[in-house]
Amino acid sequence: MIKKIFIAAIIFCTLQVQGQETLKVMFYNLLEFPSASPGNRDVILRNIMEEYQPDIFMVCELESEEGANEILNTSLTFGDFPYGRATFQPNTSSGADIQQLIFYRADKFSLENSEIIQTTVRDINRYILQLNTANGGSDPLDLNIYVSHLKSSQGSSNENLRLSMVNEFTSTLNTLDPDSYVIFAGDLNVYDSDEPAYQELLDPTNDIVLKDPIELPGDWSNNISFQGIHTQSTRESSGPFGAGAGGGLDDRFDFILLSENMLTNPRLRYVTDTYKAYGNNGNCFNQDVSASNCTGEFSQQIRTRLFGMSDHLPVVLELETNEEIILSGTEFDAVIKQIKINNTLVKNKVSLDIPEVLFNEVSFTIYNTLGQKIKYISTKNSHKNLIDVSSFPEGIYYIKTNLSNNTPLKFIKTTF
Image (cartoon, rainbow, N blue to C red):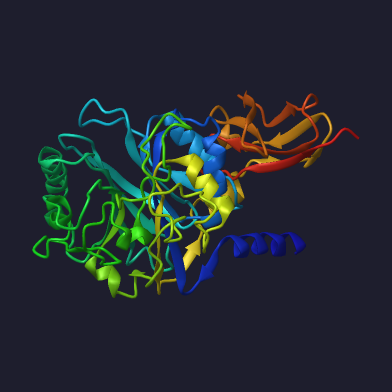
């Protein structure tokens, strides 16, 4: 009887049903990740992510599968909930070696599909996330997400290339259901609201009409009137890191656009006044975002981290839904398939139990609290795996697997 009650309690806790729910969305240009300096940016990013904790995390300037794994296995390991990601595929549109990708709360969403829209410059990546809702089987709530990085620099030729890329996207909108929920996010590299690419994105004759949630048209570039929405550059000079752009905060390059229905439809609706250039206190025009006089909502600590992470600021917003979200998906599977740690206070060896279903497909990486990789282990055909940590200094450590549905395991190394 006690055993039955225990199992029921596990399932009850796993399948948490919630009513009105808020979803946090972030887009971030990561600046040549992971190769650009400084070398510990996966840890810097983890500290930024821990403060905002996005449910949907969209990125550009990701260089490799290795970088995608660093984000998943280090930067997104701050909570007790799991993250998943789409498959990384190198850019197919040209010789560019940077790409876009999406990460998401795996207990709230499932990734239903992904595809690439090719352009003359860089891919535009489309992902379909399905929210885990109570009535998802009969009436699924799908979110179509497009992540982009348009051609950079001023001049009519670059403006035309940006427009060409956007046209490739808008030409596909007639393939979607007219009531689809759509996010178009990215580093758009536009300098003002009259740019043809921006106008095409918001064209009211498109098959699905997109809106800029903050509706602040104008000449954004080097204009102090728009200092509160500038996202680039976080640095007066690129000298300290040898990568990215300088000049201080004076351009609005980064955007999250929403389909018009998301401004009013209670099933998935933008929460008014939540769109922000994350880290911008509105008083840092042409300065480092970390400047001591740029005080306000965002602390000195988070602005210093943003300064070190990239030459762009993230943009964020919140969505709300009146659907009941069920925190299930991979977490429910984990009740059956979870890898378990048997001893959290460890002197010599960590003992892990590995379900038989995971034989031949699991490996482990151990990180310290700074996010540094301490040890890598691959195991095959072993139901119980012992990891020797006798040489580790005292402290807290995290074990991360290569499985997308496994949350980090924490243990404390002690010498007594």
